[in-house]
Image (tube, rainbow, N blue to C red; front, side, top):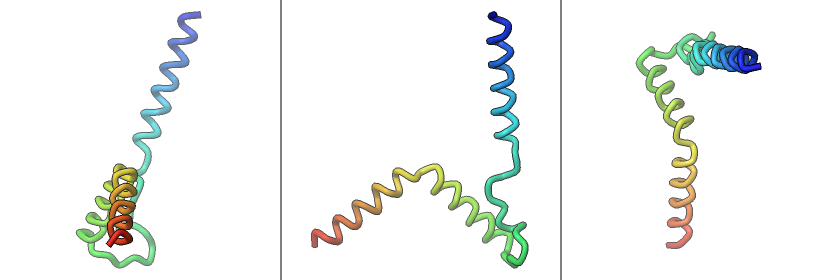
Amino acid sequence: MKTLQQEEEALFRERMRLMSNAAPRYQVDSLPGWDVDRRVAKRLRDLLYFAEDNVVLIIVMVLALVGIAQWK
């Protein structure tokens, strides 16, 4: 019984590892029809990563700015 649980955990860890090693989330510079300078594409990709990682922070900041704008 213990070996079955260990095997399931190993399979789960392997699946998570494979999913994390998948293709990068945003490959803006490789999209067809986009003639974008690679530096601009890298900045856009970095911005998308930042936004993805800080969604709650961005939403709170937007709500605060809207609240301040309506208060004045």
